[in-house]
Amino acid sequence: MPPSTPPPAVLAWRDHDAQARTLPGMSLGRVPLTPDPGAAERLWSMGARRAELDIPVDLDACGPVTARAAIDRLCLVRDLTARAVQVDWDLRLPTSHGDQTWKVLSHLQPPRTVSGLTDPETALRAWRTRHYLCKLVWRQGPGFLQIRDRRWGDLRRFTADDPRYPAAVARLDRGAHRSDIAPDILEELTAEHLVLTTGDLVWWLPYRVARWLQEAMAV
Image 1: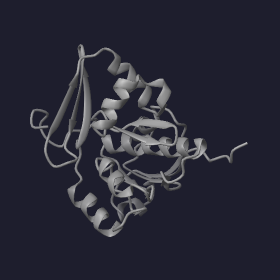
Image 2: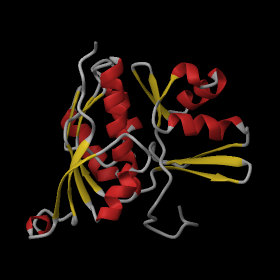
Image 3: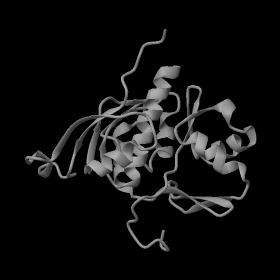
């Protein structure tokens, strides 16, 4: 049997400020999480405004158990980012293509540390200084699905009216096997850097925005 990996857990606080979270009543303690779509919502409802992942997100290990664990934790980072919750986490990238992968993930809250890069300090500085909410978001309207992507500096907008796309996104949202997604849809999403592949799993990168930093028409 493959080695077991502990389920995701976080340390959580009611305030994002480093000093304020040390005050009495600010800590929510260690919160065990199950890999389901409601994890971030439950943390938010508990009052969490800052969270710290228990172990690094490891994209350098491609086994089925480690890939699943990495995706479960990335889901949490993505969904908390959508709510503007401060996330403290660490990232291990594949040494073969880490210099490209960090940019694909740059819409997420910047990690504390990142390994697998040629120049990790420069990459982290760029990630931290250029990050903002709504950098890669998606929405679903009547009969269409739209993605807005600003990870590369300009606005790239993709609109799909093929009814297969919402079903594909629903499968990809928590990580799906490649064989579960129509090849033509997966090829297009991969070409646009809208999915991340680790091991046999493919994961949906954009988040549905939960908090706007500015008027919706400007975003």
